[in-house]
Amino acid sequence: MCVCLPGWKGAECNVEEVDCADPQCSGHGVCVRGECVCSAGWAGVSCDDPLPACQEQCSGHGTYLPESDTCACQPNWTGPDCYTELCPVPCGSHGVCSEGQCQCEEGWIGAACDQRACHPRCEEHGQCHDGTCICQPGWEGEHCNIGEPRLSLGLSSLRFDWWRLTRKGVRQLGSCLCFFYIISHVSLHSYSRSGCRCER
Figure: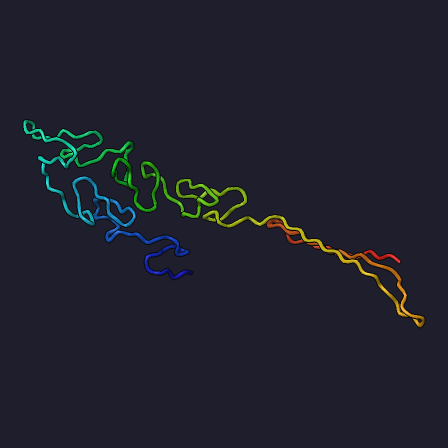
């Protein structure tokens, strides 16, 4: 088990710790890369400051109409004070609209923040599908970072001559060719065989 240095987290200490001071953002926003992105009508570091209703400004995204005491919002903005930015898709419960796109809270991805994120290592040899890493052929593991063992074959041979010492000197009697091989695979037990063939 890894003991991570300050600012890092995860099983392998490779995920930067970018939590907000209040990860729930007071229930009025979502934590995105260490900062609370507040929902409409809320502000502050932890989204705990209600914004005053100042119709004259229309949040800088509309024009105040005194005859009807309402705001005429610019395109892509809505709400009584034009504070709520519209996104092409609703951001759901795991994101907020900011600058025309959904900003997802940690652990969520997608245009609508509706898909669970995978570990960053998944992208190396897999594809994330709603929080599950689908591995490419030849890879396995939760994050597709373990290569599957392949079939291996080892083969060795040795040739030698054998001799006999007699009273008249050394005399060659023959030669031998010996071999040894091993076959192994992840789904098979290792298999080996050896033998020699000698000639006189």
